[in-house]
Image (cartoon, rainbow, N blue to C red; front, side, top):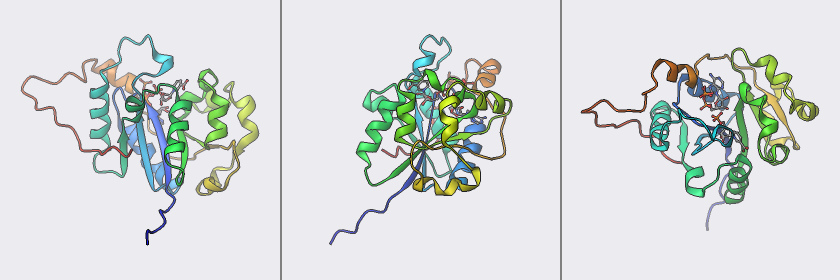
Length: 215
Ligand SMILES: Nc1ncnc2c1ncn2[C@@H]1O[C@H](COP(=O)(O)OP(=O)(O)OP(=O)(O)O)[C@@H](O)[C@H]1O
Ligand SMILES: O=C(O)c1ccc[n+]([C@@H]2O[C@H](COP(=O)([O-])O)[C@@H](O)[C@H]2O)c1
């Protein structure tokens, strides 16, 4: 007799990871604890639709390797599912993931800085109707997140941070500001200091981490 598969509680953090840094890692580990997640996946974006004109976007493989290196030794898994599915918009990725994993429960994670532009994402209200959303605090972005255009609609669905572990029981939409220690790391700051972070020094073997793809 086959054993019934157990429902997994999975957090999803999408990003450019150009490059991945300590902020991604610290906040992800804290979110695993706060939300009682079984797994947390970093979805490395082949191309953020709102960064289409960016001239400083490193090649996809370099960003993937950077995420794997930063996730190494943690329970965080790095996924290239958007490259494999050919999806660029979050709503398309999440719709596919939910259909592929009907027995699991997903929650979308986003840094406080991204809330200000959330209303510009394709079908953003549908995203909130599909999955609960948890916001990772980020130094300097608390006010802009709370004042965001999207909050005009989302504020009616905000859940108390103290109930974070109960997210699988919530009706949707459900929006949560996580109360976690912050980390000021930023990929923009890293690139400003080292624009060639993704170019290997000559003689390098280029090995970086062993993060397995979850999907
Ligand atoms: N230090 C941080 N604290 C909280 N959330 C973060 C932090 N850094 C990144 N995030 C969140 O992680 C996700 C992926 O971030 P991303 O890869 O764009 O890094 P970034 O540092 O914001 O990059 P950039 O400076 O190039 O915009 C986004 O939701 C972002 O808000
Ligand atoms: O779906 C959209 O319209 C959309 C617009 C902007 C950003 N996103 C997603 O937001 C996540 C964070 O992106 P970034 O570049 O700020 O790290 C990443 O998963 C992107 O694909 C998604």
